[in-house]
Structure formats: structure tokens, C-alpha cells
Length: 82
Image 1 (cartoon, rainbow, N blue to C red):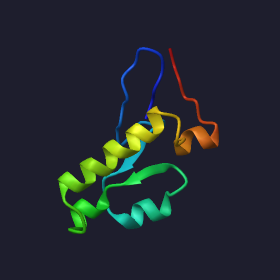
Image 2: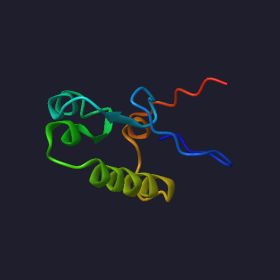
Image 3: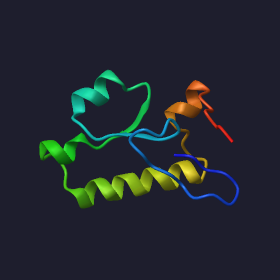
């Protein structure tokens, strides 16, 4: 989740500023230090796409409003390359 003045939030499975696990929950468990939200529940059947979309939107709002910091932020990973 990469936010800045005049920019749009970005969520990507490879974005270091906002990673989302799209495999299974064991992946998120192994990489919990860098994955912000585990979406593996959709694949395993523990959550619907709609439920996960709601959770992802809620997380985006929390980050955008400053209520929550991303894992990359907490680790000091500011991989901005102009």
C-alpha cells in the first residue's frame, strides 16, 4: 500500500509497500513479517471474495487514514525508485 500526496493506493502481490498473500495461509504464516493481509482464505474456502474485498478495503482505509502502518513501513522498507 503505497500512498502519497496526489497518488492512489496500490495493492499488489509483489508491491513491497503493501503485500497481499494470494496463495495459502501457510505462506502468510511463513512471511508474516512482510505480508499485510492474508487473502488465502478465499482459496481455501474460508472466506468469500466479497468478504475479503471488504477486509481489504477496510485495511486500505486504516492505512490511508494513518490508523495503521504497513509491514514495510514498520520495517523501514522505503523502496521508492523515481
